[in-house]
Image 1 (cartoon, rainbow, N blue to C red):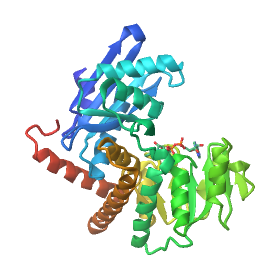
Image 2: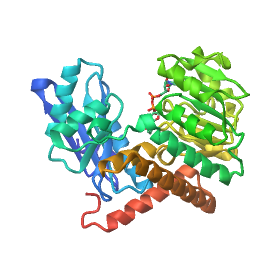
Image 3: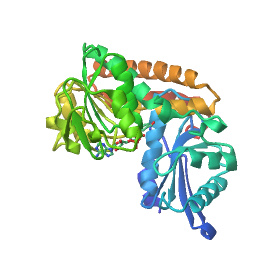
Image 4: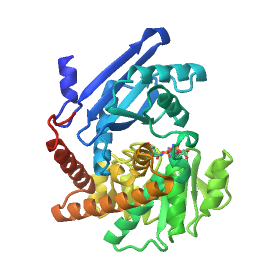
Length: 371
Ligand code: NAD
């Protein structure tokens, strides 16, 4: 046991790991509070049959770095609940309520939605213990996937990054992998500001049109529960074809590890802005850097969602949240790119340095460093 815990621990955290079980409802879950030097942790509740403590620890750390990079007064945490998220509704409600109740005293952790949970689940948590973000609008939530909080942040990170590589957004060709909550709003904001969406994909396939795709028409098709390949706007292809499409800006907004050492040479873009979490392996990121392609790392580029969630928690309006996303993401992108240039670092290395230095400062202001 000692050995297992030692492999998870470093100078930043975790501050605590709590295992919960309640046999009467078959409840098993884990909470990892990584580091709360900057304030109570915010992180999603993931529900799946195959979650693990190791995964929970890594995800909690990702939230520590993301929240610090975003300059939020919140640390990082994560929770996992073992079970099939598609289980019977009442049973799921019972499990989530039970898990939240068991953690009612853990004020260092604020629940948010993640894979397998949604705003309704967060409403149950709020009802049990009063602490959750990502709530339904009826109880004060900001519908971040409907307003496109993360896509709005992506637009701003890209706008700043393009200045660094002296490429105008006007006329820039964009390809988006994953036309979901993140991808479609990024497409909307970028094309509203002069970009041209030439390619996109979803889990069914891809669509390409070098003359430009009509973003609203694609959003409407997705809204009808169809795939973008049901559109007649361009040439339909396989899911993987997005990697080969000629473009200036490539946005992964679907799954982890989609670009790796075996396919990275196929990409033609000058800028990659990571909407999804860890969409590129470390060697793929290094390859692009060595070939002069600018890559904005996930926890800088896709922080719009968590910034919005934190704003919701503090009672801010939707308008104020969007303004804060713009302000923070523009400033952070600028700082990361300046730091990377000054010290010849990969943008990800610069971003980690930025997060760590903010965390160190927060930790020095505390009597107990990480909690
Ligand atoms: P979503 O489920 O709304 O959309 C995902 C889209 O990707 C869907 O259109 C789906 O069809 C498509 N897709 C799935 N597999 C694919 C594949 N192999 N190739 C191409 N497309 C594929 O999810 P989302 O909320 O947009 O999240 C997308 C990614 O962004 C995830 O990695 C998520 O963790 C990350 N993220 C989301 C937010 C947010 O605010 N929603 C914030 C930060 C990070």
